[in-house]
Image (tube, rainbow, N blue to C red; front, top):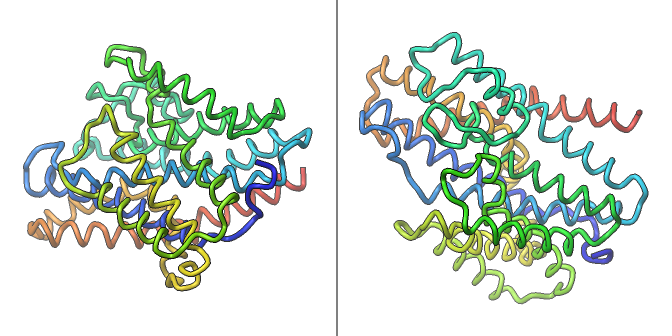
Amino acid sequence: MHDMVKKETFFGVQFLRFFAALLVVITHATGMVAERILNLGSGQYWVPGLAGVDIFFVISGFVMAVSTQGLLGKADAWKVFLSRRIVRVVPLYWIATSIKIAAVLAFAHYALHARMDIPYLLSSYFFIPALNADGEILPILTVGWTLSFEMFFYLVFTMALGVKVSPLRFVAVVFISLAMIGLFREKDWHPLTVLVSPIILEFLLGMIVAYLYGRFKDVPVWLSATLIISGLILLLYPGVYYPKLRMIFWGVPAFMIVLGFVFAEKWLGARIPKLFTELGDSSYSLYLFHPLVLPIMGVLMLKLGLTHGGLAVVLAILVSLCVGEVMYRLLERPLTNYLNARLKAS
């Protein structure tokens, strides 16, 4: 792993960040319009878009493997890694969660599926899986469920750095062992046990992408294109999805797509329009804040009489993209830069 990948900029991966976030936004926009505007009830949405999360998980595994090359073997590697990840993930999530809680308190009539007791809210802030008002393992800011998995991955990765062993081998042993337990998980198990779901293997797949990229530099264009196109077809083909086998039906195609883009970086990276890589930069803000934007859009569109389903979905997505970009420029980027500067100074 030490000589796996030198530090590089992967514009294809930046584009994939945006693509993954957009898939999730489309899914949530269709769900919001179905429930709030078309009165079709909850649970009606574009299902394949949920696979954006699986792309995120594979990307996360890849990025962690690549970005820690200079840390491996150093005495304080685990502290540096964990502090960087906390700065990157936690403050913005806490702000978005606080806004969601304030909105629920201020507009209780419009807030659907909200549980507001203190233990649940503390669980939401600290990435601890807990049951919401509908009996689902989701935090108050629902998209935060993915961050529980992210933080769990970071903790295991931190342990590998702390004991100075190969993160790839360490994560492989821990996650494969836990995923085997997760195969037998039932709904009545404690919410915390959701973290052993086989979906955690997607982080491992991302680390394997980094390993393969380090081993095989000159991959032909046709192979990269085949991986990307095949992965997209498998990922987005409607009707082919079984929740228990999510890692297979969405995780493996996500792995193919990320691997294809990483291998294609030499000939594709420079050709990706700058707009998409910039939207990739703001993907975390988009991901966190679009769930706050969509219900507001639903209320406004109803008041304005915009009840055409397709138009409502498109407008909701466009406004979410704009808000995500604004929040990135005005909040996420300056906040993260400030905290990183403080971290280096300490």
